[in-house]
Image (tube, rainbow, N blue to C red; front, side):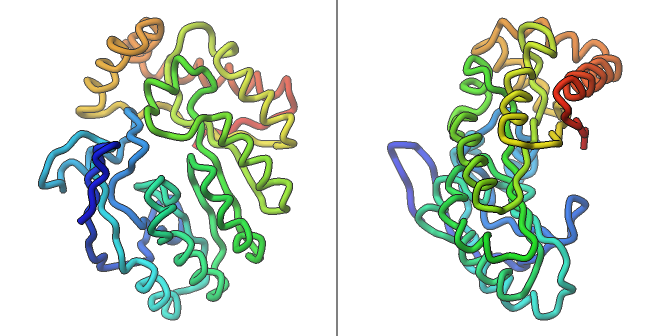
Length: 276
């Protein structure tokens, strides 16, 4: 067990029972950690992690290091079809602790030897550490997730994640290296102003990077997340409260307007906007 008192993150080690898991998001998924230090308020995964936690610390304040995960992946890949692997679905494989544990790099080394296609979904420029390996894959892609470029929004809802600006700079380096890269604007966080005002800066940044497609997703606020997100608006971003209430009043019509507006905005910049 290790603990960082400065960040008040409780870190424990455990043994995983499976390395390459089946997933609806990809053929296989690998989650090196349970929990996520980024502590994003909107993250749906916290519902599952909290139910398995014995300490019930706040979301983002507890992390389980699955120390044998790379060994499992190395063993299992010999029995699996060479199909796409996602890093990761229920954690960020490149959260701060991976700078020390390097579980993700060890996993990637195994997948490279096995010839598996790889997709990385992250909020962290730490992925650049492993660019030397990613360039060796016949098929690899790094997708950066960004919810907003508005500091009033992301500083409240993504309290410990790297800044979106840092992510865009890292994405630029990924693309310059020849590795495929993409942008996932997710989740949509209701904000002050129109949808056009909210997304135009990010869309322009994507255009400048040479991207042709932007992926997006709506906000998952089910269960206890609804209350948590509302409290975050009240406490940290009251300017967006009216928009969030509009979403809660009529989610289908709100999301249809969001989709229509952003798709048209993308077309004006020759960008395809795809909701997942």
